[in-house]
Image (cartoon, rainbow, N blue to C red; front, side):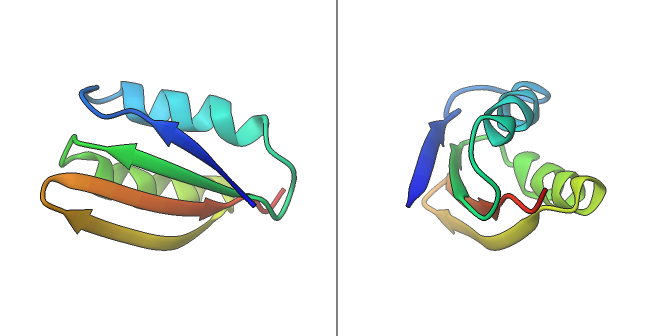
Length: 74
């Protein structure tokens, strides 16, 4: 089961701030799927997962829409 967070059209730092808030609202081992259009979000999501210990399971770009699947670890 995954929760979808749509932050398309938002620029840094909003995608990360919204992701940080949303990840707290899901259960451990659940997946948060983030949809973003900010190219900077690719590096931001990688850094966010490293800092928080969550797992970045998938990161892809489909025509300027970046999809990230993050598994909450703690």
